[in-house]
Image (cartoon, one colour):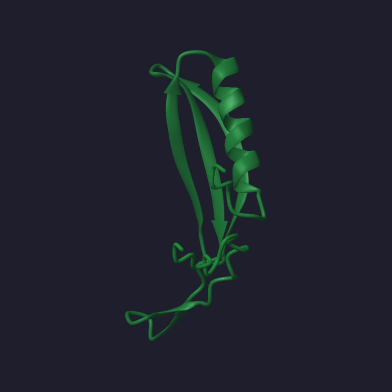
Length: 95
């Protein structure tokens, strides 16, 4: 008879809220929590870009993703990035 052991954690639950980590340079703690403030579509000579705007407790960070050849494609990407960033559960594991 084969030895069958149950999986200790078959369905992972949501990740707990991270605790602030110690920052040795500042002598205190750093808050790693962030919120996506928006996804904006912009253009320049290279093409269409999606700008992801993320707000932290002490800073706002903008990152450019792209370039994309058409504005509609960049808008679709911006929609999917904002939708995925706003999720409160981890992404599916691919059952």
